[in-house]
Image (tube, rainbow, N blue to C red; front, side, top):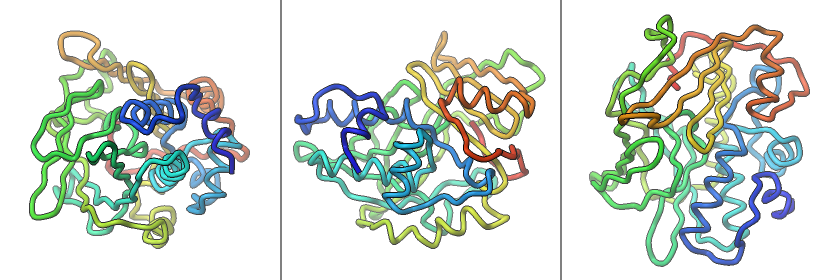
Length: 290
């Protein structure tokens, strides 16, 4: 594996020697705008691999994306290789229908220490929940970013990541009641502790998420990619673009339905993805918002 190939993959040409917050932010933003958050392997009859060499081959050499266990594992390797003090953490994702956090540790995120301060770095949540800048590990502080206001709070050693979202305007009136549309202004995202983890801690959940009928990842095929002013999402046959803060503290959310013949072209044009095997798009009935 070659760090230069990773930099080329994310289009990063800036400083690689300054281990400061500016460099860390730059790396994160380049990765989330180049590497999609996606689970398409599952819906192409392939596996979501957890090994670093396999992830590097998929994401860097084959120009693909991946889910959190993959893209944050790759980011962990890149930041560690650069010399950043980086720690893997495990998260419990909030379920709106169940009104609770997952009982299993299903999300991988990173803690990075810069200048004596700790930051949460996460390139693997995608959609409109994706952080664009490292979040300083301070409880109760609003941290405004382009997508929304993020807030970390700590209670008894457990940290919670929430967001305060803007109003949203959907010009395609027929999609106002879409199950993909986030309805809550204040949204819980996930909880976590600062206990260091290793990639081996995620082996069983990596298997479960791609094989269980109860998993949202088997229920829905999805792909999302951040842009300089918004985020593209493809879920099943539904393609959306959210433009952040397009006017008056409001997001613009555009919906389009694509047919099976158009999927391959949209994946290439919007997400820069070319699949080796045929995708079987799936919407499913599990809760998943964009």
